[in-house]
Length: 620
Image (tube, rainbow, N blue to C red):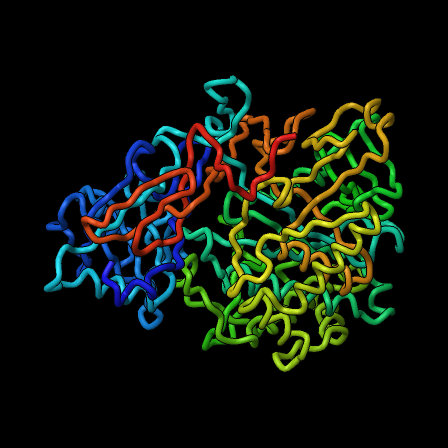
């Protein structure tokens, strides 16, 4: 590369369009082959019409042209790849999510089959501007080219085929992907151990994740961070109810933060399957581990297979009302939007009645959903949504023959003051969850989690996915030992499931453990403090997957008849894109791509071999 540019171009942050497998196909972008990189000269895209785009070239796509139509045209033109250039002044024009009545700007980019067209997003505006300048007509040829190695598997691959892959040389299991997922967080007020049993519960929920094409660029301020903040602030308000109001509750008030909701409702689906009154979770008596000094949660029993580090959810009464806070943002009109189930839009039930008696929330401009520009400009809407949600939930729990919905709503409004955007705690949470995940709130939560682990086991994890990200990343992640899969340690070996009660009883100090992400740990710690008792983790895993019994983590049984999406992420490591001038050369080796020029950080997938350097856990 030209000497004047070399220092500036030595490292450019970027991320590829997130590729995932499902039960039927592969979604997202991928190089066409593992045998050879996709190489082509950089050609700027200046207009949506790409009829004359040269085959074999790598497109430089400005953010305003990052649409389904543009990428469809590039694939039809046999482009070698695409680099999408960030532009803070002109963000993406539409959401990549499928269009819907509540998302008119969605263009369905997330559903395109882009196998054969590797696409990466250059997230730094200055680096994007330099790339655009380099690709412009220049009196000093040769023109720059890009080489992409983002191979994620054959076009026929599915989550079942990649999870069942075996080593061609040994025949032993060698999965080429991991299920999406992690840990949901939930708790209730009052805690079951400190109150008489109720006949039902009412639950306020928020997603811990959001959909995005870009794995490492999912700020999700509208679709996840705003709703998480609203429900946390609502929980703080409920945890401070006056004693006389708390004594009049007719339902238990519960809070759920569900992981993997953007990928088939992984968290809520697994949670409600486990607490279902029709078919509740059952742990064989021989596999139930009573509370003990090594229990993951003090006072909570565990199950060895299917592995549940805590069985506290079995004490939660049937959930008869659910209010989900999905998207919160500033609106010019003080309107609360309640999305009712299809075909049932009349507010006739109890929860809808108390919701109809509240007002003052805002809604969002949905064009930014699922993009790196998904930002929230004000805390006012979060505070309003938190106030409305807390009051609605408490009102629903207060309704009785003596207290009709209108009276219950009045009591709840009097018991729960309006949450203000000037509240210092709300402001700290807003800054942390929206802008800087290296904040004291998160670091204190991680330190508390580590201290509990040291007291229980004598050691603590040092890796917390997402810690220190700015802005925070709300991609759900993968279900692995390092990122949320619960595991048992018996006789010094790690297991994803352990249906051997005799071996457990004979082992020296066996234990169960869970490593949550920084987000999951922070939410659990905050919720515990607001409700004055330990909040709980719960597995967020597609119901078509189950950790395999008697083996290490990372191995799963697959039920292809489950009727669920079964999303999984390919194994990956190493940079995947380089930019160079013809004649300089490039090479791919075991250490990754390298070139005497520009290295664009990306992901390189491996089908048939596992990356040597990976954050994924190793099979015991």
